[in-house]
Length: 117
Length: 116
Image 1 (cartoon, rainbow over the protein chains, first blue to last red):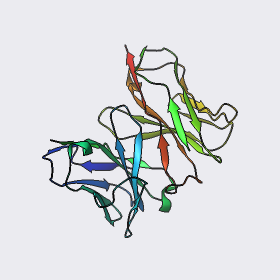
Image 2: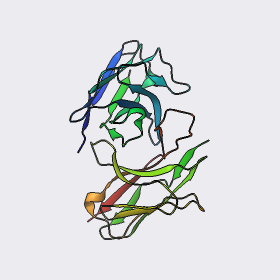
Image 3: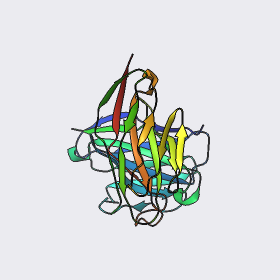
Image 4: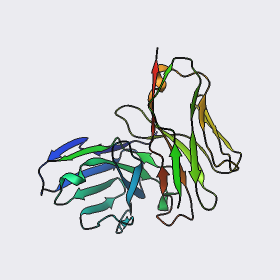
């Protein structure tokens, strides 16, 4: 089946630093990738949708200058949390879809736990 | 707006017990409904789905029926196994939702623990 990986699985950083999270589709080409954020005991909340080669579409309330998304190839998308603060601590999950617009099944990565001290 | 509400866990069952995890939704239009499962240390996996009213999704002994009249999509399994221990997420995708096309809206997840 389709496999999506994320790296790192866990990261701890100091306040004010930037952190990059990678999302890779290992055995298929992902036209669309999604980034979600999950707080403890809460739903996954969509942050942004990215299509390969174009700018990401951010959901309302998500700061595009703080959460930089790059989808440079059909197998890799990156999320960079810039100038991270403790309130950015969360579980970040990506998913990838083979169909443009994400109307096909989404395949999820295992998630990245970010802790900002 | 669109939303998904599912029963809070954790749910603890003995092996071979009957499982029900309730899920109700609020949506405009005609959403597709999904159940995702997340095993420990792994990403979410699609378990089953239904795209229109009265459809029944089924997989690995789990099933759920799309009930438009009660806006529900309850997950059931007749006899659970220890290997079913995981977190289960109910979700909907509404094509006329004001976000990105294909956007999934998730419930909070229900953790299931099955004891031998």
